[in-house]
Image (cartoon, rainbow, N blue to C red; front, side, top):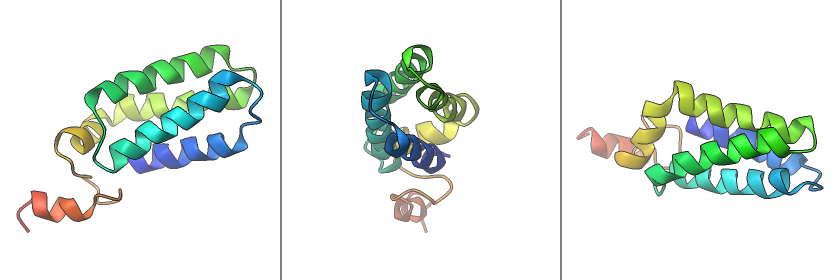
Amino acid sequence: MVDLARVLVNFFRHESCGKCTPCRVGTGHAYRLLTQIAEGTGKLSDLDQLLSLAQGMEQISNCGLGQTVATPIRDVLKHFRAEVEAHIKLKVCPTGICSMSGRLAVAHGQ
């Protein structure tokens, strides 16, 4: 789910017209945070930053694109928080999808 959120945010980042700061800056920052989490270099404080970014983009972006980018961020953290936290705390991707997937076998003693 971390990688899915990252892919969706990247889509919104590329589709942003760049006219409003929350969308232009927020999507880029959210993408960087999700990439760090996917690579195993994220911090728990990144989750609060992601939620804050999502809330800001949803409330003050000029168009639906900037407002919609909040949905995958918020929903991944709401419904799959344990998976996201595993990336941060355990430095593994439980599904083996993210770029640190090679660490999954090592973490399980294989």
